[in-house]
Image: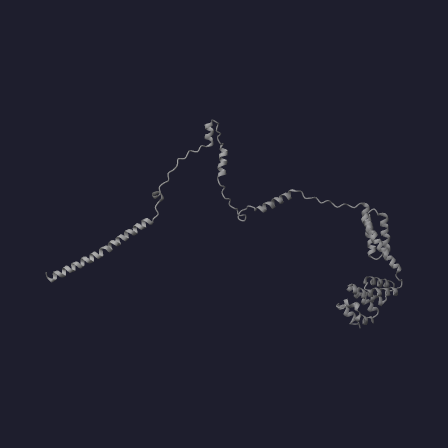
Length: 300
């Protein structure tokens, strides 16, 4: 053989070897693709109807109703009325859910509003209680009230003797009017006590002034004022009595009346101005500009 033939034979042998070595790999790839397709098919869930066999059903006896039993026995069967059937149907049906109505958007009053409206209607239906008219006083009661008013005016003015006489007349004539008589007895006792104290008081102006100074120093300003006023009735031009009355009224808080009394005292006796500048009883008057004019700015 020649050299060229030997070389061609060797190349053919190599080609055959390569083809044999490549063919199994292709087969394996084909097989692997088929295996994947089979796995994918096996992974899919098989329908129960195709794979699982239906279980054998047992033969069940037909249910016998109560009507059929009664028919077998020969008893008459009552048919249900259509009204009862309708009731059964409505009972079996579920009630539809109610929608809550919005009271703000619709003109439907809330439950609380309904109750208040009902209460208001009931109250309006009830007749309002008619007020009983006040009892009119009898003739004796009206006369007793008029007599009491006249006596009380005399009492408030300080005319205790006249007030005492009127209260006594009221009690003698209208004692059956219990309420007015009870008040009259109280005022009568006060008037009689005041008259007794008046009888015990001194008669002259100086003694009354001294008694007023004692009550002023004790802090009994009402009693002191009464003593000074009584003294002025007996001696109206006494400057020292006017000054004592001014101090007493200043303590009681009657500023205007106190300034009037002080002005009258300084007009009658100007040298009392020095005493007024340092008198503690006149301290309530010191913030008033009229007091400065009276005391610290003497008239020319």
